[in-house]
Image (cartoon, rainbow, N blue to C red; front, side):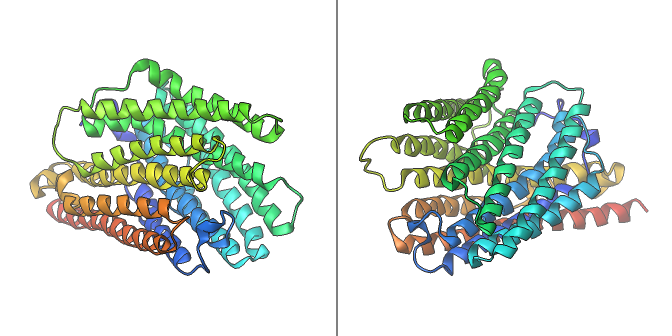
Length: 432
C-alpha cells in the first residue's frame, strides 16, 4: 500500500466519514421496501411513483451519502487541503441530506406536493453548503494533480444536476409547464455521467494503484479523460436543451461519452490484470464487476438508437447497469477497503500505546467471507434488476437483494466502528 503521496497528517476525525457510511445502507433497505410495497411492476413505467422514490433513495441516500462522506476524507488526504469547519459542515450535510431524501422519496411515493416542496429547498441547501465548502478546500489546495481536477469537474456537474433536479421537483409539485423528459434526461446525464462518473474516475487514479497494487494509470489518460468527459457532457446538455431536428448529434455525443467511459473501464481492467499481488480479493472483484457493468451500460445505451431494437427499454437497462452495476459495485468495493484502512490508520496514530496493545490489521477489521457473500448477492441483484422490466417476479428478487445488501453493508460498517471503539479503549487504558 503506497501512502507516501497522501497527506495523512490532515486526515479528519474518523467519525466524519463513518457517519455517512453508516447511514447509507439504511437507504438501500428503504429502496427495497418501496419496491416491495409498490402496486404492480414499478419498472413497467419509468415515471412510476415507486421507481422514482426508490431510485432517489439509491442516488441520494446511498450514492450521494457515501460520496459526500468520502470527499470529506479525500480532500484533506489526497488533495492536501482540509474542509472549512469540517465538523459543522459534516453534521449539516448529513442531517439535511437524510431528511431531504426521505421527504423527496415520500413525496414521490405518496404523490404529496407539499413534501416535494419541503424536499427540494432542503436538498438544495445540503449541496450548496457541501459544494461551497469543497470549492474553498480545492481553492486552498497547493497540489495540482489529476484527482483534484476530476473532483472539481465533478462538483461543477453536481451543481448543474442539483439545479435541474430542484427545478423538476418544484415542477412536479406545482404543475409548472416544463419539458420534463428533456430536463430529466439532462439531470440524469449530469448526475450519473458527470458527478458520479467523474468522481469515480478521479478517485480511481489514487485508489486503484494504492489499494490494488497495480501500475499507475497512463499519464496521457489521467490528464485528458476527465476534461474530455466533461466537455462531451456539456455538448450533450446543449443538444438536449436545444432539441435539434436530427437524432445524429445526440447519438454522436452519447457515443463519445461511452467511448471515453469504455476506455476507462478497459484500462482499469488491464491494470488490475497486471497487479503485483495475485491473490483472490473480494474488493477487487467488486471493481471488476463494476467495469464490466459500465461496458454493458454503454451497449444498452447505444442500442436505443437502433430502429426496432430487440431490447425492451434499453435506456432503462443502461441506467440500471450504470447505477447498480457500475456505481454501486465500485462504491461498495471501495467501502470494504476504505473502512478497514481508516480503522487501522486512526488506531495506528495512537503512538507507543497502540503498539503495546496491538492493533488489528486491515484484513481483521471486516471478515472477508462477508465481502464475498455480498459480492455474489450484489451480482444476483443486478441480474434481477435487468430482468425486472419484463418479469414481475424479478422485482421481488431485486427488493430482497437490496434488503440483504443493506443489512450486510450495515453490519460491515458497524463492525468496523465496533473494532475501532474496542481497540481505542484498550489504547486509552494502556496509556494511563
